[in-house]
Image 1 (cartoon, rainbow, N blue to C red):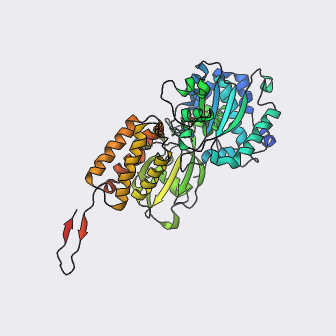
Image 2: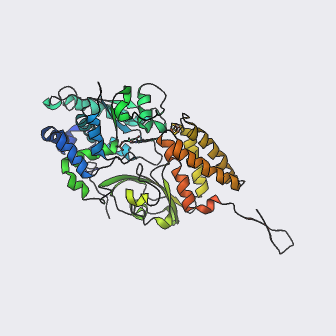
Image 3: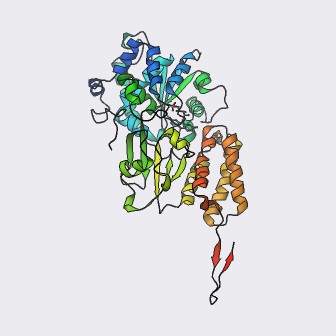
Length: 428
Ligand SMILES: Cc1cc2nc3c(=O)[nH]c(=O)nc-3n(C[C@H](O)[C@H](O)[C@H](O)COP(=O)(O)O)c2cc1C
Ligand code: SF4
């Protein structure tokens, strides 16, 4: 079984920073197709492909573009979400590094389809080594008239710039991102209104993931059917997956939906390091579910993972082997969220503090039954009452771990041996 090169088709074909190489390989053909076929037909093609947003929420992209076009405002913005703050996720970095022009072309297309004249690529602050190349690529596109006033003599204007992210996980969330671009501390706002209605500078804003933008370009060029040839009815096309952890070949792989998790670990990831036994994977980033090894034959699709209580999320797969203890692993995940909670809402801010106390006790083996009861209460409140997706989804690893590793959440009997006495006593 090989990787698919649908979105990543040009990775090996040219030096990703050279606009002439991009043009020689059909670069900007999709933009030209949009300009000749019109917006309705183009958005129809994207809808027909079944593409769902690759940033985590899996919202249908065709519908999103249509709604963005309908939104009213004096100014409109498109923001490429290249914040990529979800631990274990590094697939957008490959797209920015190896084919930035396809991302820029996707931005111009999204701008025209949503009637926005201003675009921003919001790049993770930690990717600052990529910033200069992205700015150079944007400038090249201005020189060649793919950006700016009356681009390609089409009568359409579109400007693009880079904004360096604020270095916080929550800034990948639409409103927090808008706040940070406005020079404020990156914290989510209450909804409604939604980002698409009142986002950056309170104007309609289309926030769209880097991989989604790259996929749009390939779909327009090759047609919706070519995309649907991969995957399943409900999980159309291909997905860029970031595989890391205890595997021999960590990296980014483009795979068709429908491969099994075992194939991702053993084939694409090259199997577990040191011939150890697999233990579990965390799917979709730090806020993703925990899938035990016995269920690795589950198909990697939205619908199959949903039936296991988890989601594709950002496309991260972190692999753990028999030497990785589930409680210690979860403790690291919990530390991350406690650090990253922006503190705006009580369920997430206080819930994380409560969880720290419980996990410390689990590690120290001083945890009591009432702590597990408290953990359930905290998880329930966070899931249902947090203000943004961070608090709502960060509980998923713990909920799924409780489902699949119940023994880690039960008080174990401690056997005490008395010297010189064959009989053993048990104490709790
Ligand atoms: C806490 C939090 C962090 C997020 N981080 C990212 C991110 O780094 N990249 C991303 O594309 N989407 C991220 N999202 C999802 C975005 O809010 C948004 O749904 C997505 O960028 C929309 O693009 P799409 O429709 O192409 O998926 C995050 C959401 C939350 C709640
Ligand atoms: S859920 Fe967490 S990150 Fe989101 S607003 Fe509340 S405190 Fe901030």
